[in-house]
Image (cartoon, rainbow, N blue to C red; front, side, top):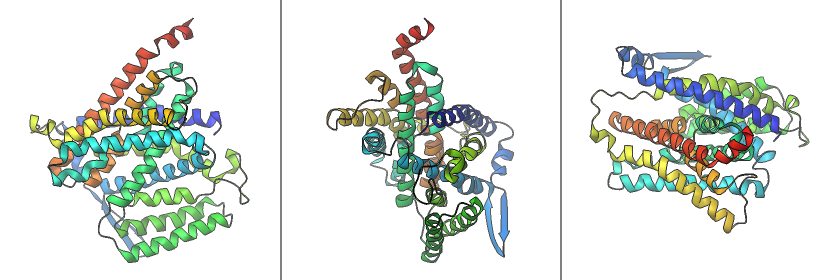
Length: 398
């Protein structure tokens, strides 16, 4: 991946992280203000979209979670394809470290969550909540350190987070589906075949992919599989290279043009809208029992402890058993700081939590755990990296 493209991505994500944090703070403030009823009622308002006699009636909250988040996952699909074909995951040697780290960073948090919820079958569905990493917040925290952190370490975190997103997509598809509709799945499959054929035939008109993509999203929405997965599938079908497989410049690649166009909208509009709709936690009636509930502890400690233990164990295994190397210019102390930062699950964890639980009490506990674990991971990771890079900071000032 060109260095300029990486820098553009990091710049969008770090700035977007500030907006995302502001949206989360606003959601918390509104939930605990006299405007609480109006704020919560806003996302319960129903909007109906009708096209050709077919109508979709959803609450505003569902439109955000099923519609806007599908655009986010469309971008994730585009990013995954670019990384696999041309980026940090394009060769086995490059992919080894972030792939193994992502796997460790998913397995250990799930195990921590299970330890706290093993005796509570009704909450075991939340095991995947602490396995996620929020790219916007993680890159935003890392960017606060500027040049003290090697660029290679930022690229490693980006690749790890993208693999994390891929893992989340697989988890959602396998474990968070409702009653399946064979008819809707069959109709969606037809649309996916059309998308793949368009790619193979060299179709480069974005409108064609949008039209078929909306059709696939509608079918998936009605199928029982979460609709956001349609976004990822469409993203993977958008052509990155020429019809003959040759690498294209950014201006000539439909996929790359979509990535550049969507990043600002996702970073500054879609993700903040999701945070505004899902990050509110009411302090009214909150007791110590909520804070010490198995869901809260499982999610918070899964993010804070599980993530750093899983990622570091995977890095050690990859280094000494698989021959992988740490990112250029990085040392083990810096890698540990980044491992802690991967515990910032926030939006992705909230999203998976919204699929895992319907019980209002469990949702409150889940949100407490996500916010607490993400905040602890971000602040601790930032402190560790600030301490271990003091020497580099002194050299930069000299």
